Every structure is written in structure tokens, then in C-alpha cells.
Amino acid sequence: MLIALGLQYDGAAFSGWQTQSNGQTVQDHLEGALYQFMGDPTLAPVKTITAGRTDAGVHALGQVVHFDTELVRPDSAWLKGVNAFLPDSMVVQWVKPVSSDFDARYLAFERTYCYALYVGPQAAPLVRGKAGYLKVPTQTSLDVPAMQEAAQCLIGEHDFSSFRSSECQSKSPVKTLYEVKILERGPWVYFIFRGNAFLHHMVRNLVGSLLVVGLKKEPVTWLNQVLAAKNRQLAAPTFMPDGLYLVRVGYPEHFDIPEPNLSSSLLPLELFEKRP
Image (cartoon, rainbow, N blue to C red; front, side, top):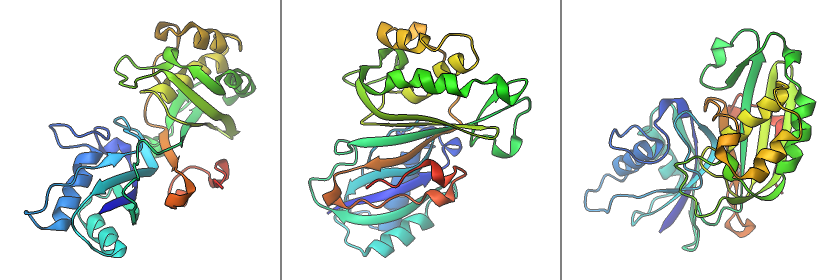
């Protein structure tokens, strides 16, 4: 049977999603917990498929995973049992059986990411690892309206090669962004990106380039020029992973995939409208 689950984790504790020889990835810990819960060496080891293969240091509030198994257990037993074998830095929020045509990666039609940035003359040690940090003399040193204006060129279908990692394995650099929002809340700035899919390091590269505009190092029109050039060398360096969150993943309605529990994060809930 095919099972889907919703996963939340602190990315600072792991070497990214994808399995590695050191065994310290989200996938390694999740598959290890599933193996321990199943408790039957005659069953085939579980192989998980995820909606988004997050990098080291990147967090998830609404990661979605699916796997195939011969073991039949109530949803509540899966939830309680798997969580019992997971480290404190990750938790399964929900578990449900899904139809055999479900695929956590390929059937996701949209993904929402949020980058949380603390701005000021001094760092905020209590949120270290949970937010990015930009050191500026004063909060007004960052021109948020300029970034908001510049970001409008990103909406729609574009070739995002200028914001693509050299290690990206995506078959095409063409992606569609449905929404880009940049919101200021006191010393905090939140960058929200909603799109059909994202390239490796794409969000962090976009944040870094938007900050170039916000710091008045380049004009508002610069970002559109970088986008059109399709040249990674022209964009800003990849920004730190600490503040990046995979917030939610969207699927066709008939799969009835639950909404993630966003109240357990440091992100303001009003930033995110509940998807219809």
C-alpha cells in the first residue's frame, strides 16, 4: 500500500534531505525510523520519495513524503510509532494511505517557500540557525519597497538560469512563480515565493540578489537584467540557508493532503493564506 506523511524538521540538525554515507540526512533518519517501527526484517526496506529535497540547514514545515509498504497499520499507529524513533529535530505531523497513483514529487503542482531575515546592527543569537541575518547600521538601511518593486519581474514563467546552482539536476531551468511577496515586520523581513517548482539554490540566490537592490548597490531594474541574461555569474552569491523554510506543498484536491501545522514555527501565521 502507498502511504503519504507530512514532515516537519529543523534543517540545522541534518546534512540535507537526500541520503548520504554519513547517515545524517532527513531521509536517512526517516527511513531508519520506518524500519525500526516496522520491526520485521523480512519486509523490504522502505524507500521514501519527497516533494522537495532540501539542502543542509534548510527547514521544512510542510514537507510531504510517500513510500510503499506491505505493512498494514492504523494511521494513528504509524504516527505514534514512527515519531517514537525519530530525533527531536523532526516530527511526522500526519499519516494517511493514498491511492496508487499518488507521487509526492511529480504530482505537486505548487510549493511555497519563506525566507525569514533578521535585519539590524547586531545579530539575534536566540534565533540563530532559524533565520538569516543581514548586518546593517540601521533598519532603514534596507529599502524594502525597492525590493518589492524589483521582485515583480520574477512573477510568471521564466528561465531562471541566473539563479540556478551549478549542481542543479533539474531538466529545465524554466519555472513559474505565481507569487512573490516581501513583507517587513519590525526588524524582520520575510520573502515568500510560491511557484510550480524551484531550481537548486533558486530561492537563496533570489534572496541574495534582491538584497543587492535593497542595499542600493544596484537599481530596481538590475534584477530584470540579471534574469534576462540567464547567466549565474551576474547574480548575487547564494545567501545563507538558515532562514529558508519549505512551508507547504500543493496537490490535486482529490488526494485530500492535509495542511501543515504552521503554528509550531517562528513564522507569523498571517503571512500565509490558507490554500483553497
